[in-house]
Length: 501
Image 1 (tube, rainbow, N blue to C red):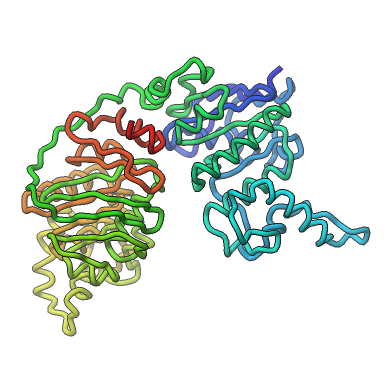
Image 2 (cartoon, helix red, strand yellow; image 1 turned 90 degrees about the vertical axis):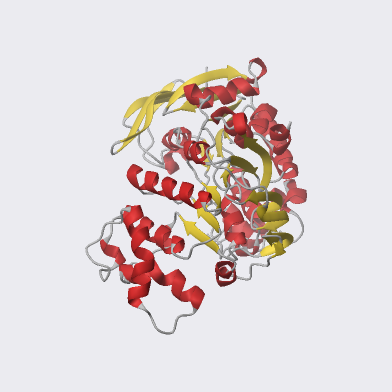
């Protein structure tokens, strides 16, 4: 009898169908990989299994009996637990307090037994001691830990509850190979003890290293369930991509051979040893799964993310980005898709939002409004920006028009290198088409563009080359006939070794 069966699960968020009849069967003593592209529904399915989200239709069968959970606490009581992508640690508390939060050992008087708490935490830490590194003990504050150490503490927190069904949703995302190996040793022991595991990962090599079976999801439903021993990596990736795997765009830019930007061995943020060259008049896309260092790369070039090591050359001359102002004066411009965090000043007039970069870069003391309006008017027209008055606050604009303001502000500075960080997020198809046209015009004027987009089709349609990042490293470069959705997925979902093979 299976440990768990999810059958015909459906879930809709407004007009968006997250799950459309999804199914999963989990056997006892099995590691079952659940994979698929971002937004395919795998995390939603797991949240329904753990009671964090309610299903619109379908049934869950646990040990042969239908069950329904009012919340995660009910699922935990039934022996089902989950490691979530969003860590639940409390930074101000110690490692021991986080691992056993809500389940602290008590004295006879009902008080927390601090000695027992530290002893239990020390035993848990010891099992991951080498992976955690020096300085992590029961009394260490979580706020002092690195990202990978926090992720391991979250794993220990889940393991300490000793559930018989455990879901790991991207539990290895912040871990290196050695740390992943230690985790897999634990999963192997859990499997031997008869416990069942659902393992979600974007790393195909991990799936083939630990899983007994794999289920591939696409568009809210299942497209494949196979034993790992009976399927190849290419078959799994092809199942994820579907019929769009052969799409390819035709390059239409004519970049010049001389480099506009050269980066060697860049370490910054999540980046580790990134080297690449951007030619004049070229669009290079930054591909890969979300959070692999693409934004860190663009923001490091713009002087926002500190650089630990490596060199940058612009136009053949060394460049040390001390901050955004230094980058602006080297004719770099940065546009973020996170307009509310890094772009728009909602309460200030639209005019101020449009000319801010020019004012800061050129250190204007007096605002020559007519001259500035003459500078931005053609860009406003080109982007079809809609507003009642330049004096109106930016908060009056729709989200899409706010993003157009951010784009227009940077274009007004006439950059020679444009850094685009998912710039079309939240804008309509017409505005996207306008931006693509402007990018083509800029390339014809020898402007070079680095584009990160979470939309793979966008990368394939507008970029001359795509460099794929995985774990902060460039693992593949796609150009010419190699620019296909299948090749992009293979590189994104493989390890560095697989992608370069």
